[in-house]
Every structure is written in C-alpha cells, then in structure tokens.
Amino acid sequence: MRAMEYGAESGEVIILLHGGGLSPWNYRDEAERLKGTFRVVLPILDGHAGSDRPFSTIQENARALVDWIDARFGGQVLLIGGLSLGGQILVKMLSQRKDICRYALIENALVRPRPVTCALVKPVFSLCYPLVKLRWFAKLQCRSLRIPSSRFEEYYADSAAVRKEDMIAFLLENSRYKLKRTLSECQAKALIVVGGREQGVMKQSAEDMARVLGNSTLKIFPGYSHGEFSLSHASAYVQELLDLIDHK
Image (cartoon, rainbow, N blue to C red; front, side):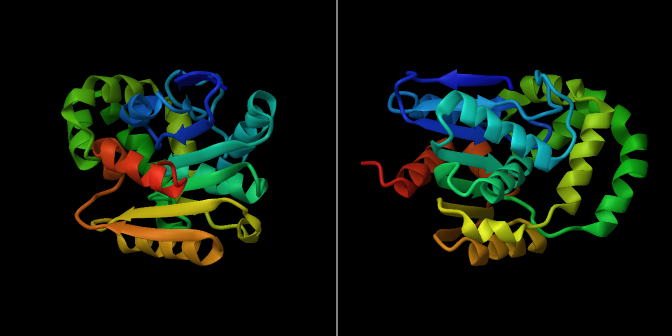
C-alpha cells in the first residue's frame, strides 16, 4: 500500500480515501489544514496512478487497507473518510471491522446496485477509453466533477495513467455495490454527506446508510454536485470533520 503522509507521526491518525479516477490530491488541501494537529494519511487506491496493486474488487481493496491499518497503526485509527469509490471502500471496511476507526466521514457513496449501468460499463467504456488520453475530454471531466482548474494537470496525468482494465474493474464494482448487514455492527460515529445536486439514487444511498448506521448523521449540501464538497470546499470539509470528532 502506497500513501502520502502529512503531519507528525505522533499525531492521531486520519485516513482519507480518494475518489475513483482521482488520486491523493483529492484531499491535499484538507491535509494541509489538518497536519498541524493530526497525522493525515492519503492512500493510493488499488489500480490508480502510483498504486502498487491492480484493482480487483472493493472488498479486496478494503481488506488490504484493514490489514495495512493493523500492521501500521495497531488496528484502529481516529477517523477514516472517503469519497465515491473511496466512500464505498470505507463502508466495506466498516462492515469488515466494526472498530477500525472511531469516526467515519462518508461522502457521496453509492450503495444501491445499478444493473443497467453495470451491464453497459464494459462495452461502452472499452470504446470510450481512448478519450481518457485526450486533454479536451479531461477538461470536460474536470468541469463535470467540479475539480478546480488548478488541479487539471494532475487530474489529466493521473487519469490517463489508469489502465483500461483497472478503470473497467472499479466502474463495475461501483455500479453493483450494495450494503452488507454487518454494517449495522459498526461502532464508529459517522457523518454521511451528499450533494443536493446529486442523482436521486445517491441521496437514497445516503438515506440507506443513515438507517443502517445507528450512530450517524446525514447532511445534504444544497447546490453541491458529486465530489464537490471535498474537492472544492476544503475549509468546510475540515470544519465538518472537526465537529464530528468534537475537536476544539
């Protein structure tokens, strides 16, 4: 497992899992704001630019992260956050190990399977994959994902570096993911956030998680699109995180 780290090793550990097709820079601004107090760790998800493993399944990526936390951090950290694919992996980690973290911040995680989308991923994306290498297409993607223009070059380089096989694999997993009943055993206090401009299925997914996670709060941010909260509003994200852990 490869990761970027910020802050002193003696600080309590916060782990943030980037979205699909992105990279640790997803949370760089948050890490810069938190590093004075915490040790912030930004892993590279399997199959992404700079990763040391291909992407197989959400379950396997979650298992690898749990094992890594066991080996490096004694089996538990203060908080784990995740966006989209990273949020799905986080939910799976919470299902696999009920005490892997004391707090969880889940952003825009889809937990309702979309069989039609799943059936179309391989044939459609196999045809469209060459577009990923084109700058004009990457700029369109940046705008749709609300990624700040200052991060375009990083986004373009990292998305173009993802192999077709890995991208298809995590898109398939994203579209067929569903909640496990063991999530109800999770001991973490959770904040579930979703953008007000998200698709209905994303808001329904957030509501599903809030019902299953006993100690959780659901917040909908009006006007925000998919991923916009952590990608474009670092100060607000950090404040919500600090409020969640009741850090003064």
